[in-house]
Length: 186
Ligand SMILES: [Zn+2]
Ligand SMILES: [Zn+2]
Image (cartoon, rainbow, N blue to C red; front, side, top):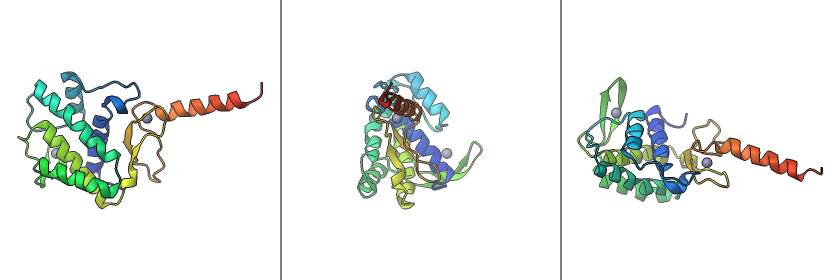
């Protein structure tokens, strides 16, 4: 695998967060608007550390999405100043930690930092790995004609073409099949 497990988990969470943006969702819906949606996201991706569970926390998490999304619109070299700025703004300080049954891994935020700050720093740290491994070609936007969803290609041969958020692979196959059928003389 191109990335170590921790990095892959963070990248998967980051993709999911970016794909809650209305312009990356096939339905055009913003899917990070309620406390429940944030709760669900934070629980499934096991975000530990301090939480305030209020409107400000939700607004802050919603607010970092466009900034992280930018990483899908640039190439490797252009991503570096963005990632460095995220690390600086998030006051990243990498430390090895072990908790809740997870083996040694890096936290670059303090558990008392705000949730949005920790998510931003974690995403930036994961991109540090992507950049260092020279695997930025795996940072991709869905190729379905009606989708702007983002994904990270974790496949062995790097051949994944569609995001996972909107069943895009199946939809495009069905469309191609219909087009072929329509082209055939009756
Ligand atoms: Zn941890
Ligand atoms: Zn898609």
